[in-house]
Image 1 (spheres, rainbow, N blue to C red):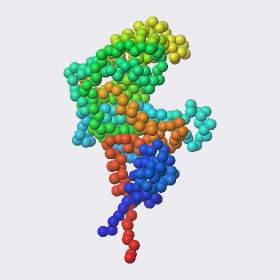
Image 2: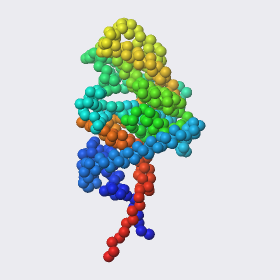
Image 3: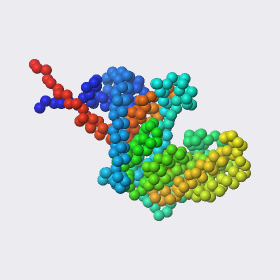
Image 4: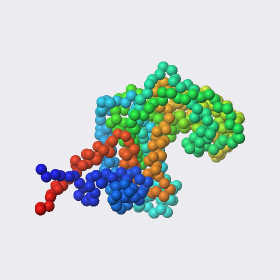
Length: 407
């Protein structure tokens, strides 16, 4: 039998080499870096233009495949959406989402006109983590005392700057004595992670995310959690696509607001005891008591001046507003008893990994952003979706017969 191979008619690469080119184009810091990586690791010379062209082409094919799967899910009857298409149902199904940043420059608009139409080139991308987890359920809160990391002054300074850019703390030369926190035992463990990433907005993102969760059997899990920060975009996706998942506000974001309220207008040694008390109330899910305590601090400071977003009074008012808006999503003692995650650390670290490829002050994208986001998410996922795509694609390619030259 004459051997056959599946190749693209206009592709300059073998199927195996094409996978290497796309891998480098998806994960290297830039297309130029991808050419250097291919030269060093695969010992082949591929131009930047070819790496970009074929990486985007394959990425577009993956986007089309993902959108087709999302449409298939939308066409399922509601009862079937509650079932699992696979045998292995997660013990704990967790969905996390957050927004990233990416620079977009449209080719049909001049840079001057685009700058006039918007505040620069930065746009939001959306990233979702699907985490299959394992954990135990408990009759009592397995960790009633707040962990040490959240009652360490230097750690909280760093978190405040990293998470929300808070800078309301007066410095002191003395570090006050710490409470006696306990490490957190029995936290949920991640078994498998997969990702969804797009810049097409919440409509497209929500459909892709819920379809991906369905394919992983999340719908049939008995314990399901949706973890995110307080952005309205996150909770609109939860309400529309994941309303049967337990909504959980990321504890780290919440405690940073508590930190800002405690430290506003005060030195660390004066505010420390209040912060430790308030943080423990938050950790224990005693939200009403926490809000009441911060309201007393607000009364001491008075209302913030109109238009002033940097005063201590404004910081306290901002924290109160945040906590009141999110109060139904902060029952942390109940979540720990149920063996559910309470932080969005996985999505935070995932966005940093994706940003390595797509974000930079000198990186600008146009129509190529979407396929790159898709492929980067594919490579970072642990569900081997990309391997299935390559196998299916190879089978569907035009078969080209290989003839031997006559002797």
